[in-house]
Image (tube, rainbow, N blue to C red; front, top):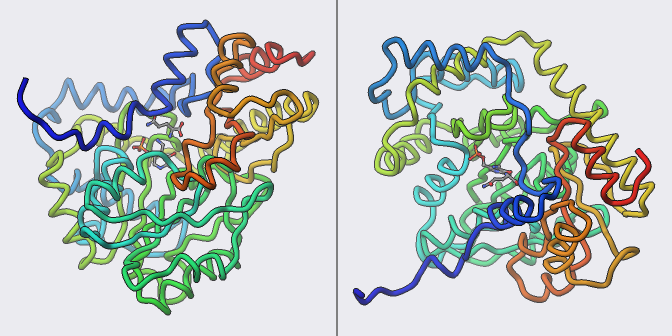
Length: 387
Ligand code: PMP
Ligand code: GLN
């Protein structure tokens, strides 16, 4: 056995893998890991298959297929009004996960601090750790998952370099208001911070709620690295095609890391995502409409069962307080629910690092509603609902 120092195993196995394994073991309805149990449109798959049968099987340019970057530029312009140069400002990655990793590697060094809102997506602490930087958590306040300017001020130190914002937010389903985004923008400008925005749920915003993109606020475009992904928008989480939009200066750094992580993402899948980006606007409207029905089906059922939650304004997750049902800690409750009620969920304390906060946050679990209606109803019936 060679002598090794254990660095990364401190992160253990991802909660998403653990709960999916538990769901399979106990034959439970999997409302834990966020993957749809349906696939995106067939024409996207056909385009990827045609690419494999055709001429798209060797390395793509490290920055991404030119056509894909061009289509991404058109899409973000339509969505936000901002023009990004496909040549200098758009890069394709193996998922938003890789893009986040590249952003951490590109912009943070040992001793730096990056502020983020807790609860947070599980790869954030690992990304910070990979650079020796520290993730400083600003707690979103339950039950509404909001924050105030003073919370950011108290997280600031002379070592703060960046702030990482995920909106629409996993796991709470919050879409930060324009006012909240403006608070973050003002804070970052006052302290000259880089802003990294994780917008992978950008298309999943409900009830006509407007989604404020950080890059559209005054003075923010060139201070912000926008990260997104095809995974949620096109219901193809296994394809792992993500992207960044950032100024040429920031993009140069990101690309330098990306070329030594994976060099380029799977070429035929990039060709498939080109077909996805050529879908008409109606596709996005239908996606939202279908998700709205799934959200309401799950939320109505959970409310009837006595769970307390803020109805998600975006994403495909609901974080619910289960205090009426059990005094178990969330990690134990999630396993108990999976084994005995046959519904797998995610305990939310794993989305915090600060032990004090973890201790206060042990009565919430996350339900995913990226499942067909029959599966959502089956889950609710397992929990005791009459649906
Ligand atoms: N950020 C958030 C908030 C997520 O929920 C996910 C989901 N997987 C990702 C990033 C990663 O996206 P991808 O699957 O494209 O790597
Ligand atoms: N984003 C998905 C979730 O939050 C899972 C991602 C993963 O399994 N790594 O459930």
